[in-house]
Image 1 (cartoon, protein in one colour):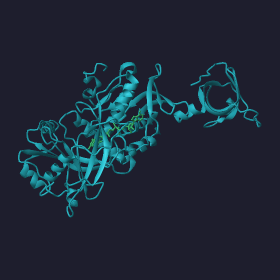
Image 2: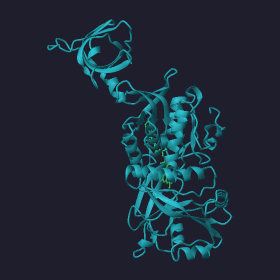
Image 3: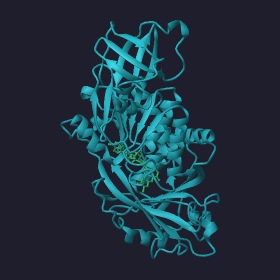
Image 4: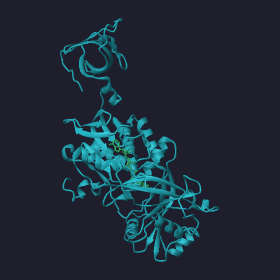
Length: 482
Ligand SMILES: Cc1cc2nc3c(=O)[nH]c(=O)nc-3n(C[C@H](O)[C@H](O)[C@H](O)COP(=O)(O)OP(=O)(O)OC[C@H]3O[C@@H](n4cnc5c(N)ncnc54)[C@H](O)[C@@H]3O)c2cc1C
């Protein structure tokens, strides 16, 4: 940015000039007059370091009459291109959020709602299908083997409902939830312990009890158990991301897509400058990086830190319910969202009742194949044969397991322990850059609370009511650069 600041600069206002002999350039100029700053849209007629002669008008509002012939103190002079970058003249944002998936959009929503000057940058079109947050359904459930997720999920239920009340349409559909698997499976044992620890009402079912709850519809082997509770549900992902972006915009956030961030640099003591591949730059006091499967690439470029996050390509599949039984698998009845461990070396299956495509039920495998997010194979699927077998046995022949009817590709950003990363980047950035990543295929449900926490970390330096210790970058101590 060119800085022409000089206390001696005199601006002569010649707005009455009719014929302009030579137009030097058209500029936005920020000037200080008494204690107020004014933004002028000017045609510059002559410019030296000491003097600027121009014709033009105030960008917004009007200059008080009494001040019209006063001396103006010229603060900055920027090119048209520079002025276009911020969307609001020479603005320094309180927080710049990089990545417009669900985490970045929820963060923009919280930040803007707090009254912060907020900028959200997305590399592709908003609501694109190349990341992790698009599609028709995500499960929300409170049954986790790790106890630290329980408060996050419980707060998220409330925040989802608050946000959808603000926007006026529904993104959260309640359902029951069912986990099944071998009785001694450590994940299921830990889930039961957590239900007890958090006094979450639940039922532990054997095969016969499961059969009487879902007669003719859900089965499992004799040595398995089911854990049934009322805290399940479905979130509509693309619709939810659109909701957060709309609300963020309503609260004053600036949203820009096709803005790929290629670097973030310290801006002296004032925060950061964020650079995009189309040659633009933005200044922010704080920056939040929520770039999903691209987090390794960007964080390494910016700071040299290598995060152990593996992008995986995965698929969701929709399977046809046999004619006459569609209602038995539909949302709004008693059919639950579900997850199934299948024991050592087996697959972890998850799914939702029929909602988005009438007569089709979503059943998919947790996990996927390692990929470079910029060179996707758009492959055929992960352990689909095992999945077909599971569907045949579990849904008692009521769901056609021969082939899926609809298939959608998506990406995970997987950490070694499948816990999130929610932390300051540190190093030369200290607390100025916060990273939210590694959501490992189970983060969507908690996006509203993650958005709140990322905003608070960036602005307040600490997040209220949430212990972020399990999400610290330093837990990956095998990486000497961290
Ligand atoms: C098939 C599938 C099923 C899932 N099921 C569930 C579920 O049932 N329940 C649940 O809770 N979770 C689930 N998840 C996980 C959940 O969807 C993700 O954890 C969540 O969407 C991650 O969001 P994100 O914002 O971190 O990433 P993304 O959605 O990928 O967003 C990151 C954004 O950053 C942008 N970006 C990247 N680099 C840059 C850059 N340099 N400059 C600007 N922008 C950039 C990307 O284009 C992208 O839009 C599932 C995920 C998948 C793939």
